[in-house]
Image (cartoon, rainbow, N blue to C red):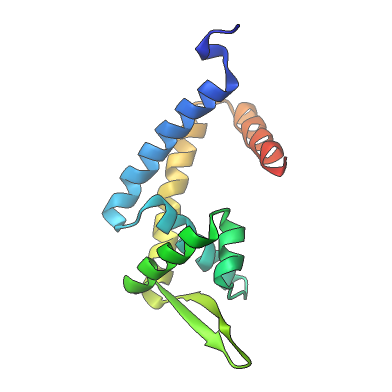
Length: 142
């Protein structure tokens, strides 16, 4: 049996916790939780690529639970950062778009989170950082 410090799962757990704490800290002044950030940033990105996702499409794109996404979307709507709109022909599906306030906040939040990511990756060599991102991409794809 390996020592905990040799276990990939144990190491990933600790790196993830550290990263989450740092992300939480940079999002706090922006009045966003991590999940709110992910859903706002994903909606903003999709909107900038001519897409107005449904709540289910957003949850899928962001990799979060649909019910949780629905609750967080309501919160973001209450903060004036997102709009949920129905389209003629199908009033059951609500399509999402960022408001002007959401469009102003999303890039700032993305920049703050990317700075956390960069600080983490700066602990590695350039090759190590590229390999780390490639490995995460491979693991995500299953």
